[in-house]
Amino acid sequence: MEHMSFRAFIAAEVVPSERLKELLTELGNIGPGLKPVEVENVHITLKFLGDTEEAQVPGILERMGSSVTGIPPFTISLKDTGYFPPRGPARTIWVGIDGAEPMVTIATRLEQSLESLGFVPEGREFKAHLTVARVKDNRAAFAAEQVARKNRSVEFGSQLIGSIKLKRSVLGRFGPTYSDVAEVRLH
View 1: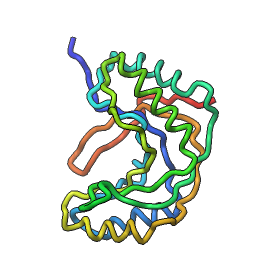
View 2: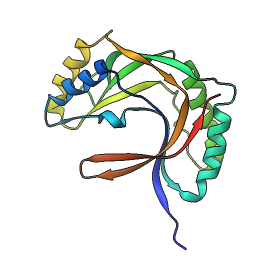
View 3: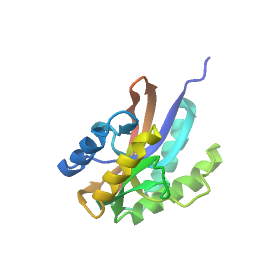
View 4: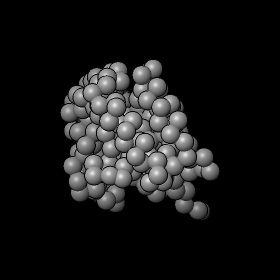
């Protein structure tokens, strides 16, 4: 019997506002060397799991359930843009999140509870942010940094977070394709 494993992560999904779509388009116009996140792939990673055995899924779901205990659905606001590392060249362009405290709680609980299943804790504090683009070539970094600076303090809309999802990531020639493995609702 072969072990089925897949690349997995736990995320909160975001439905991009028109304003956020405009930002993705603007980043896309920078051209080669910069890869904006696909509109349908926009999400906030709460915990990256990496290679995950199918057999671990029930245990992961159990821990996802306990991570949202006592946390009702909440609203986040997306605003500001910036990049990592802050002292260039930029590798990642992000949008900031207001009202992310419940998300920090969920991520911290996941980090602690999943360790017993063999998922190594990151060892750094969870910072809620939305990755909108990745810089693949330093030549695109300067243009990307300019877009990020230009959109500082722009509001990108708000969103109700009502569930967290275990997602499967399949790496393809044109980037990752994500699919839902399971959803755990906040209540």
